[in-house]
Image 1 (tube, one colour):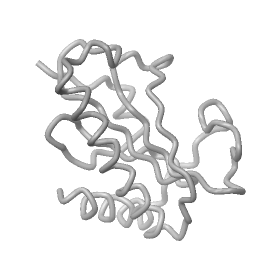
Image 2 (cartoon, one colour):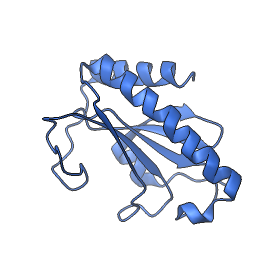
Image 3 (cartoon, rainbow, N blue to C red):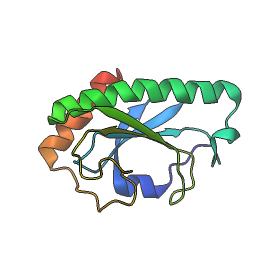
Image 4 (cartoon, one colour):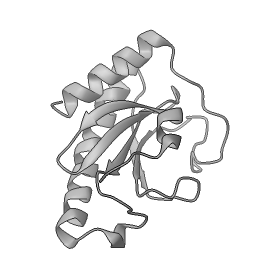
Length: 139
């Protein structure tokens, strides 16, 4: 049975569920950023997924990328590049980050991970970002 690691609850907001993944908005107002977490028990690596779920994860990442661009528009942040990452060094539960990047963002051109502390959303921007993500993902 799927159980969400509590680290995600502390650092992100629920958007909804796609066929494979639970989707969360990372609580960092500097970046349009979704996290995909496959709703399968005990997964740590992409190789732990059956082939059909690996394909589904990539398709959901593409869908999430379009949603990240929509979130960026809603927040007035131009997404010029999408970054995908399945690091798991801090939170071992299998998950994939889909991050909207732009020249001049705080970490550009380096990775966002470990760059600096997150800046949490203020409520109105959080509401706008969640609404945009849900609309783009048809949730």
